[in-house]
Length: 156
Image (cartoon, rainbow, N blue to C red):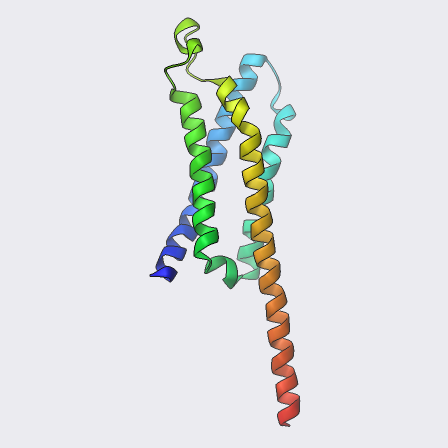
């Protein structure tokens, strides 16, 4: 059961990464179009997404079993992306804001901007955890290969 749940969460984390990136991009575009800023100024918002994507690709390249079989990591990854999606949806569909009725704005840039730093921190922590799991898996592989080669030398 643990393996099945781990695989399901591992699959959904990639889908939720794309969805959360798209919603944050939409929120940045809505906020920056209202402020008449260019999207080039928002590069620091997208750096954590790039870091997480690079670590996920590193996991796929190295075929890390610790990341793939870690139910906790895969669940937390899905949970973080779901939190980001909920923050973006609330910024888009919150009708209890004054801006919604007064200016007929369909997006709450203040709520989105208030939570943007929390989104960045969660993504950096997720990428760092992924990187640590990959490094741990690589180090245990080296020790395992070294132990096997030493056992072969002793038996010969």
